Length: 438
View 1 (cartoon, one colour):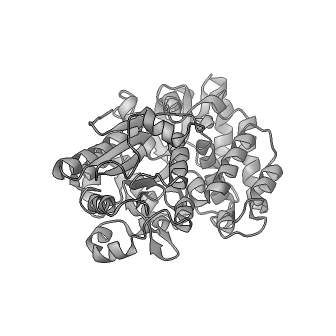
View 2 (cartoon, rainbow, N blue to C red):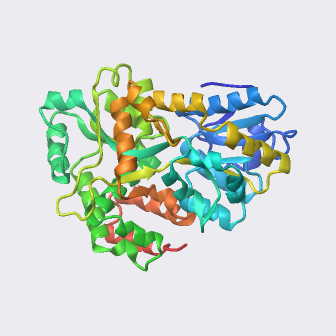
View 3 (cartoon, rainbow, N blue to C red):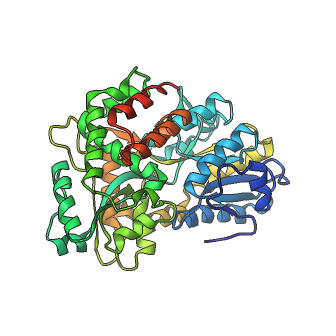
């Protein structure tokens, strides 16, 4: 991991550890007490962490009198820590996130700055970003976060070498997926890798099945608070289909104990222990960095999720993260806010960072990168990602970010139970219906 004197890393700490203890344990001061500098928390894990750290280091080098102190967390630990910190009034100056329902909860609690006036004064910053990325940054017509980093559709990855060995072709439909399961199992290869302990990885399956079977309207009804929206017949069908896949042994044995934060699910794919994996576009960079020659030797295949026979959804639709987002804590001091806004204007998505995202196999949300994408050694994957993001009539935001934190936690708990076959589709729907609008 790249390091600097100010950088701190908190990996996988138990949710029960108090925030003050967590901060003292790693030697960091509380936000707002760092001697005039700003603080910034974001996700750990390479290669993405290195790009984020590089942007902070570049800003600190260019602004030696106004430093940003950064702290990194694993994905699941971060979601707990940032919620606790905000509730305690001890949030970092710069808050990394996914926008959507979580951002709305911050806004309703008056925990983040309204950046609308700042964007009005700095229109050049807004004008260099993909317009579609601002949807999840906007609450009731006001902008509370700056889109950053890259667009991250969920992609169906597959191991070409394994497919060739078994003598099968990539799936073109849900029926194809179900037909491939026994073929791979017969060869001692898991059909799908899955880091099921992390729960949100399971969620990606439901996001696609809901869309492909019922169209985006099914989940949109949930977002709009429609009573009993989770009980829509197409929702029940989607929930049933995923349990059909579990019962058919479609996933790696013991998937509920496999963690995504450790990249164990990625390793199952590139080592040939699993044939396929549904994961975010960021997975490409991980496999490129950790999979030896797996990517460079053209053993990695990728595609959008296939259609479901008789489904109402457009197979060109995408799901995932339209961008990542940076907000500014409303509790930060005036000086901390000034530094944070300088970072948004001059430290985010500068040329060097854009190049690093592309080198890692990511499509930045900055406009005007088409030539760089085409010239990359990852051009084929980047063009798939760009195509999904730009051609999808509907790009559904990750559910656990689109929903409120309360509803999202209930969702993730019940998704784990659904995949463990401990609840039925109708029980899942009833449990989720109970938190609609909360």
